[in-house]
Image 1 (cartoon, helix red, strand yellow):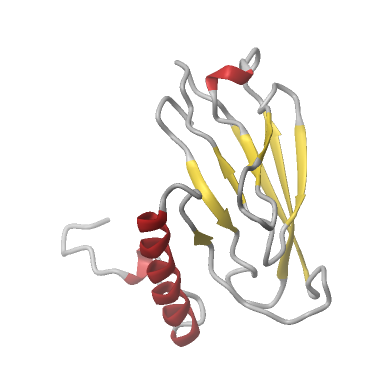
Image 2 (spheres, one colour):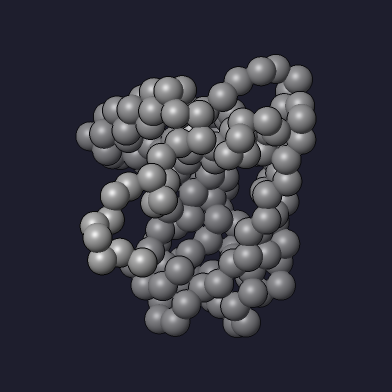
Length: 152
């Protein structure tokens, strides 16, 4: 991520692409030496009240392990500094969800508390993408879209 990049609050999609296994863990390894906390690009974990996130500095050599559930809302605040903040992400999957329940959802974004219009747009987007995934089990990707006769 570089200057101006961010991720709004979101929950990750619940399953692998075949919808067989639940995504249960997200491992984030921060690998940019000497990245100052005040330069942004920090991980944010949101509580159930959605008022203010817990900010975790994306400090070099930090490994962050997060459960991935239907309520593990997280975000990345805006990168303010020069340079690029690097992070390696890994996901772990399981045949059962962490809470033992059955559910399905696509990656769903929402606005921050002070962004009600963005929240409405993101809600419509999530509804549309969920409907598509229910009809087209694997979703629609780059290879499903016609690119023209000269596309490689």
